Structure formats: C-alpha cells, structure tokens
Length: 293
Image 1 (spheres, rainbow, N blue to C red):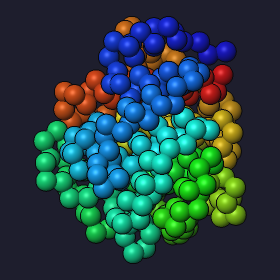
Image 2: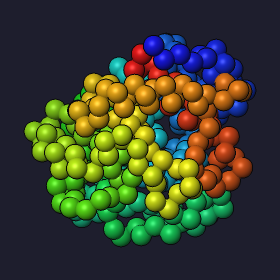
Image 3: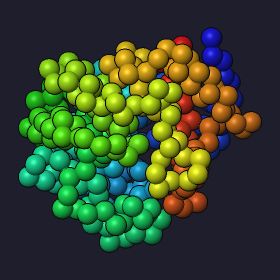
Image 4: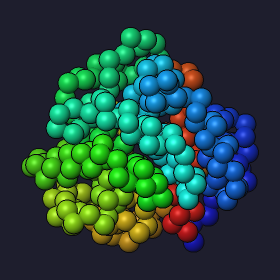
C-alpha cells in the first residue's frame, strides 16, 4: 500500500495554503463544513457571477474567466451533496460568454495582466478551446450529479455537445493538457451514450506508460497516468494498465517534500502563484492518494 505523511501535509497546508485550499483540505479529511468552502470561494466572485481575482493562480486578473469557472466548479463539486446557488449562477455567466459552437474561449480579454501567464494574456477570445471547455465542463458535470439546476442548465448541454463533437473530430496527436482534460470530461460524463466512442477516439494517443511531456513547458513538465485518469472508477482508467497506476501512486507519494507539501513542475507567473500552486497541488496529491488507497 502506498504511504505518505498525512500529518505533514496537513501542517504544510496550515502553514502555507490560501484559505480556499485550507477549507478544501478540511473537506478532503471529512470535516462537515461546506459553508467554509463556499465562503472562501465567494471571495473570488464578481458581480457578473463569474470568478476571477487569481482563483487560477497564474491568472491574477480580477476579470471573470473560464479558468476561474474551472476552479469554482471544482470546489463546489467537493462539497457534495451540499449545493449552492453560486453554481447555477456561474452557468448563467458561462452561457453569456460561450461561442456560437458551444465552446468556451481559452481566456477572455485581460486589461490587468500583471502576474498573468502569457498564454492567458495572448489567448484568442474568438476561438473555442477544447482544453478549457472540457476542463470546465468536467467539473460542472460533477456538480450536476447533486444539483438539478446545473444538470438541466442549457449551457451545460451545449458545452457537453461541443466537447463530444470536438473529440470526435480529433485526428492527430494533441497537446498533453488537451488530452488530459478531454479524458477528465469523459470520466465526468461516463453515463453519456457518446462516451465509449469518444474513449476509443482518444485511445491511440495515450502512451503505454501514460507519461506525456508537455510541449512548451519546462524540460521537466510531464503529465503522468494519474494526471490523465485520477478517478479510480472512471472509464479513462481502461486506457491505462494497473501496473502504470500502481507505479504512479508510488511516484506521487515519493514526491512529497520534506516540508510536507508537494511541488509542481511548471513555471509559475508570480511569487504569489508559487505558494498558491503548492497548496493547490498538495490538496490534489493527497486527494488522489486517498481516493486510490
């Protein structure tokens, strides 16, 4: 069985993580306080019902962004079965920014780019991105399991259709993060009739060992089996061998740092993002290890 220092991770979170990730970590350990997560998340919310203000650590802009929606739905999904009106209101906002094909732009225009990674600032707001649409929609689908207002929202139906159509159209090797978030979407939409065919469409692009270098990233930046298929019960697991998952669980546990937290292998855009990412990645790593125990 893979072992790691849970107490050390808890101390790292207390010492270093932002309030939202401290609250998410409490929920991960079974603390019954969903309101704490909601209150911490609400600090990143704008009056248009979207989320900004650095909720995505490498996007420090105050503006509401699809990446903010990704993280907001992620946190809301983690308080299940509790629901919040913030989720349906976020769907309303996403419906206003979705492009005619149902997809989301990678990012909206940013007029306060300090501390924002260049790929956010330079994104084309007129073109749909499978990467960000799949990531946002995957987390929205998880929220929808317990929230009928999200499950029946017209934005979610349009967005799911875009994702399935875009996956069906893929015919060449895609960027590592496009593949990862497409697989996350299929895990979250496991009950959809289109999912089996979509998995077959992606199967040839998943390496035998599940490791994919991130083009355009650092020399070390790599996605691993548990980045592609973190859900032990998701259909994406059928694309990977049990041996590769077991080895990757050992890798995740082994990468816990002496201070109790985990490190990341990409370049952060600001000093604030460095620490915020470490808290976020620590919550994610502990969640994966506990879910796969």
